[in-house]
Amino acid sequence: MRLMQDRSWEGCIWTGGSWETGGGSILEIISPASGRVLARGGQASLDDVTLAASQAAGASKVWSSYSGAARANILEKAAEVLIDSIDEVAWWLVHETGSTQGRAEDSVRLTSEKLMSGARIAREMINSVVINTGTRFEQSFAERIAYGVVAVITPWNSPLVLGVRAIAPALAAGNAVVLKPDPRTPVSGGVILAMVFEKAGLPAGVLQVIPGGADVGEALILDPNIAKVSFTGSTAVGRRVGMLAGESLKSISLELGGNNALIVLDDAEVGQAANAGARGSFGHQGQICMATGRHIVHVDVAERYVTTLVELAEKLRVGDPATDKVDIGPLISESQADRVERLVNSSVSAGAVIRTGARREGRFYWPTVLGNVDPSMPVYTEEIFGPVAPVTVVRDEDEAINLANMTSYGLVASVFTSDLVRGGAVLDQLRTGVGHVNDRTVKSDVRAPFGGLGCSGNGSRYGEVADLDEFSTWRWRTIRETSVEKRDSANVVPKSTSERGGKG
Ligand code: NAD
Image (tube, rainbow, N blue to C red):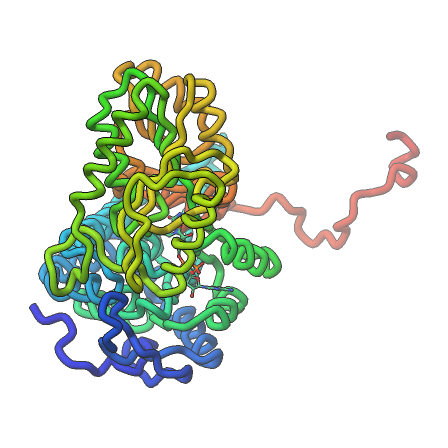
């Protein structure tokens, strides 16, 4: 199936169910690998934000009156359309985000699963719970209701799946959505989703797609028609977004950065741990919130671990995933490559040892293993978002736990050990929203609750078991057969104690 038959979306935003010229400046969509201009995208102006939010508010009234089954049918159809278009969608992920072909295809499949998960939520959603009042004269219900319009703001690194992980449950619960993708990835983060949902039969106006920068994002958060904000991005921007949402008293879900530890204990299967460490640090060039940012390894296995990690890193092919069979593509921008280089160089100046890599050509950065890393170094303290594996050696389990917790982030932690009870006990002491024993830090399951603590988020969780709590709220409704109020009584104020004869 051809999803994007023509280029009518170029220079446009998706509002009210059609492609309209955006009032913002035209965006050049650039391949991070080749620097080639792929297309010209539209951006919203601040007036477009107002219009999109108000159209969504109108559409949300119709959409929330659809039955759960009707909403589920559309989400299932969207999953089907997406899978049928896997080649075209993967092409955009490869060209626009610098993803490898395999990862791009996995991302399309995961996104389709997420849509199916949304369908399950819509179909099985328990809308109301009866509260026992003890009398047949009064009925009392706790009802789940949609917020109205949800603003979804997404980053460039995995724009398709991160958009859908919020859009699918929001729609399932009966909300309309205004999506603001990152201006670097407006097609895989926005245009494709507009096309998929249109083909799936989503009523006009229920999903609006308005690419734009920080000004568009801020206007969207503050718009009076927006009732709930779902933000995925950096911790620094998340703070600002949280402030704006707080100021306007809106419900907000914040999914932010990570600096995730992989602990390798002395009884771990070292080959498996190193494989998980390599995939965790180098997959998608390290540009994943769940990436392994710190390798904390017991001294007894440290040299074997580092040697294996170096061997794995050196096997990875670096290049343009659009033209070559490669494992490592480009970083998203020159400035991100500058940042990675700076973090590595300053850590090396402070005593870290390059075991392999630390080589750069333009936006390409070679998979790098750094030894002798201590907790004061920038590669340890900061989220790198590049293909770098910093290794820190510890003497025992307690030191490993202390070091892993020595961060303000709290997204994911993994522990490798052959003793499962020991692994569980270590996880219990780690302050993260997600923890795994003998698995990679980068792991996805559409059913599981995903989210962070501390600087990684404000306690929101995405995933089937948690989605309804995130994207719907409760209303208490009671119905009495007859009122308990006295008829024709104008006296609404209780009598004062003196009027009642001075007794308390
Ligand atoms: P970013 O914070 O720079 O941008 C994210 C989105 O926010 C973009 O759409 C951007 O245009 C928008 N934005 C920027 N300033 C804004 C403002 N003032 N008001 C409203 N919107 C604004 O993040 P990024 O660099 O694009 O993405 C990388 C970061 O995202 C990393 O820190 C990564 O860990 C994090 N991330 C977290 C998760 C998660 O689930 N926890 C998933 C993916 C990425």
